[in-house]
Image 1: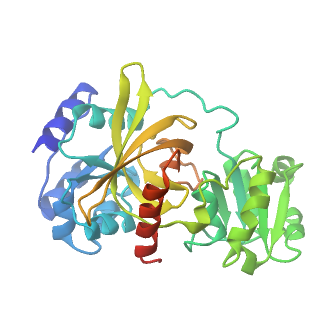
Image 2: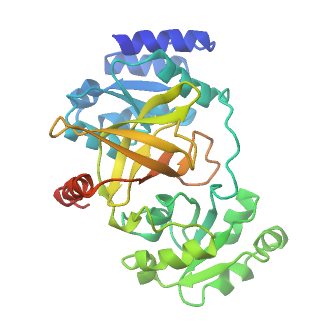
Length: 346
């Protein structure tokens, strides 16, 4: 349909070859012939493939690391959006798909989209979390820091933290060590390179309980150590919330609209997956499409953090943005809070 036409025109304009495949066998055949830069999947295919179908597709895409983008419509069921989010979707295009929307994604993937450097106020902070294998739990410290806009280096063991720093090749802004008295273990195993990178880096030692169930209590201290304001998004109160979202950023020709898919909502803000987020610090207008009721909520916000598409190079962070609600009246905020409460916590 129109998604294929938009993809074809945008791909050819950027020197790429578009390929269409509907059946699983045809998809596997095409993936054996070439490594895609971008994969668009219509929501009905997600529904037809059933649980695990999208994960299987991502596994076949394999080493190319091509992002998988969902093509959604107003009638896309909530369970399809939730399944797509759980299985690793990284963006969402709303039908009818505009050629400019596809071109923006391809330009980002090809490195042709030149972005101004983020100001010091909004540049991401790198946190090395030693003694944690990743953002394993929704309320764990790693998850909370990622949705606060920080970039995470994880070391499953305290002993391996020095090696992670050497692999990264740059000093983190903060070292968080899980385990009583564990900081000495990091330093004892650090070679010359790691020691030079860790020299002078602020550190914080926390217990396993603090990094797990009590992680939210650590956030104010960590944000202060990183010189970041993180309270307004209220990440510790977020709940899963999967909806197509349009966002418009002010530009020379008025609002420039594009789309994404939300993955969480808090009383303070909305968290959106997209390869082409708005600039951090910019004001945006939001259109939130609610699949369960068919409503379209409009709101305004400020982009608190943004991670446009880039090779992660060992860092963990979501591509997308966190948007702090701005000037939202009590009735609308109450409606969103009710939506938060009505959504089952993980």
